[in-house]
Image (cartoon, rainbow, N blue to C red; front, side, top):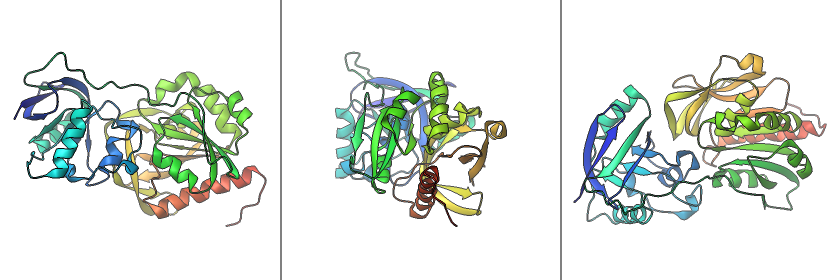
Amino acid sequence: MMEGMIKLANGVTYTGHWHGEKTECSGEMIFYTGMGNFIEFISDPAIKGKIVLATYPSILNSFMDKEKLESEDIQLAGLVIQQEYGEASLSIRKWLNIFKEKYIPVMTGMDTRSIIKQLLKEGETLVSMRAKEVDITSKSKKHTSMSSPGYKTFNPNGKTHIALIDFAVKNSLIKWLLESDYKITIVPNSTNAANIIKLNPDGVVFSGGTGNPSNWKLFFPQYREIAKEYPTIGFGLGHQIIAEAFGANIKKMKWGHRSFKHPIMHVETNEVYMSNQNHGYEVLEEGLESAGFEISFQSIQDQSIEGLSHNNYSIATYQFHPDGKNQKLEMLIKHAFSNQLKQSKGENIYA
């Protein structure tokens, strides 16, 4: 069995068993703490180009179900796990073959506990990952933009029209919106207010995605104009972009929230919910008042901001993602968005 090595930015190295082509790659290492939802996580556009350390030892015992894919392909650049390769495990062999076909290296038999301690100390950090004998002719997986290049419509006969701004939209978000029988028009993230006005939507959704929200700063004036004009919600990266576009402050977290059971509290009711999260940036409380926002949800674990509502405009944002698995929480935000849409049409809303 081939040997491989990962090297952290602080110089600490680890060795283990290498599976895949004799390649090398580099990227930011993040850790996934979930014991399930593996397929959804590794196909989430938010982890594009990242090297994932899975904390659950038996994560490769998952079965490949293409219906659970959040995008068209697997997005991670590399995988590091404690689990050893077992000849008797059919699921592990299948996964290793899938990763090999996509030029995504996997390292097994790793001391994941020790690596996690390094990440908790140093924060999510750049690492290099390479086989002992690198074949320079073997190409690494290419990582291109995830945003759709143009417009696409779902459920054209839906009674309520939603413009979905695409920063790398997840399949589960589209399915979640379709549950309400919305007509959905996906638009590129380079859109402007004039293009949205031409669509004449009833509301706007800013999707999740990957990267630093400040990367879209050029478009902030247009995003502000759109959000002021229409009932608007944002998820994940969309939550951060809307907040920063209105003047809130954003910071990279030392280590992100990356699992599907993060506890959050609804500030108005003090009720606690489990949420699906995958992000490495956060909105800061400092500057929220001048930006016009109030906190609607907050993390139980580290008190980071998980939701916002605007005082003057029909805007609500959420750091977490709806995926159809947290019914009580998702009914709450779906009901709130429905009220936003009704109020924009002049309907009276009663408690």
